Image (cartoon, rainbow over the protein chains, first blue to last red):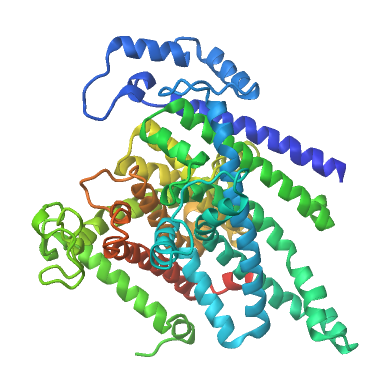
Amino acid sequence: MILFIVKRLAMGAGLVLLVLTLIFSALQLVPGDPAVLLLSTGDGGAPRPEAVAALREQLGLNQPLLTQYLSFLSGVFTGDLGESFRTSQPVLEAIGARLPRTLLLVAYATVLSVIIGVAMGAIAARRGGWVDTLVTALSSIGVALPVFVFGAVLILVFSITLGLFPAGGYVDPSKDALGAITSLTLPAISLAVGFAAQIARMTRSAVLEVQSQDWVRTAKSIGLAPMAVFRKHVLRNSLTPVVTVVGIGFGTLLGSTVLVERVFNYPGLSSLLVDGVTTRDYPVVQGVVIVIAMLFIAINIVVDITYGILDPRVRRA
Amino acid sequence: MKLSPRIRQAITPLRTVMVVYLVVIIVLMAFAPLLAPYDPIAQNVAIRLQPMFSPGHLLGTDELGRDILSRIMFGAQVELFIALGATVLATVLGTLLGLLGGYFNGLTEVVTMRLVVDVILAFPPIVLALLAVTLYGPGPVTLIVAMGVLFAPIFARITYGQVLSTKREEYVDAARTFGAPTVVILFRTVLANVSAPIIVQFSLTMAAAILMESGLSYLGLGVVPPTPSWGSMVAQGQRYLTTDPHVLLVPGAVIVLTILAFGILGDALRDLLDPKAKKRS
């Protein structure tokens, strides 16, 4: 088991290094001078030479490539992600302020997706018939719904028409926990719908498979209550694959916050990223991309190890 | 006309409706300059925010008095052109990577499947797309190339898996014994076996590409205005959600239907071409 964990961590570390190299080379591979490119405003006018020279200095573009690469890596590992072009704030500080908000949103959405997805998938598999058809149809639609369209429809229905939830914005959970949860509910639902649909599909097929096993028939034939058999034996054995999807889903949800935070005007990590892209604030964009990729890799390692603990066969692979 | 049971099974009313919808969208797109009732970027503030079904404007007008139906039709051109370009690029890139990685062992396999594929999959796709937009600026070319690279790993994995099982088949051995060059074996013999799942994935990737393109355009980072695009129409509509929800709902519904249609087309193609796949997934 320990060997499995060490191996998985080593693979993760290798991947981190590769990802950082890719992000580093992204700026270097741009045709022409990256400094000129980042200063171009799109109206065709060339940026002033002094500005270009200053930016080259700030980004360290005048140094040899290897020096740049090494100082980039050491910067990342010591938490120095540079400073924002626009506000001169250290990028790590800006990220630190925004990250917990986005993680809260993603965590809320994950909980909603798992509850809704597992419930719908289990009911569909158990009841069959029209319930099954309905859930299958809903999950097809759920996967196809763009979060920004669904989010806007949620605002229209639950905020503008019914007045049940606020249309977005940010409430500090340390000051008003209930208010924060209420204002996060619509964003979390719009984030969760696609993932819940995926989990519902998975749970449904897993339950159908487990239900046809011999030991389920045995459990029923020795007179256990059908509901107890379903809860204790069928459902529990169906959920192992769902654990792995949660890891993949976390990445998808994290990606979708880019859109959801805009729809609901939520000042999280992703809106920092989008603002950075809009204003071509490269250090901010690069910093957020690094943090998101690291999070994504870390979650996948955790999921793999959890899966290894749950299912001993995985460890040997 | 007699249809085989497999084809009859693959055709359901819903799938037929969705295919018809796709054909309509493609025709509207292809003949937009002839069919569109108005210029999609012509403003006329006197008739701004007309409701749906108002005379002369079937789907109403937006806040600048531009005809929504015409904008949807021209938006389809941009949308489908970018999605198709990205999907074709992803298919070609991914299939090549998978072929190389699967057929040659050792270093090639490590580079294609580990270095390239795993690194791309280490990011949420839209985040990597945003990085590309920062560096290269928004616009169709950036979107096509970025999404083409982002969606390639799915094709690479499908091809890779299929190649691994195919290359041990006797007929591949036979081809090699007869002196067929490696390139011929790769493209003729091996590729023929992966075409079915690739075609299915092509349709599903079209859906994913439209989803991502409309999302980026919604953020104002995809297709640049005034070129109409479905995503930016939704973004405009959100500002008038309280008073004129149709400005958002019409393009929103078109996006959802189109993504759904490509997804359902993919399912239909799977039943038609690759009946074994259902059991695998």
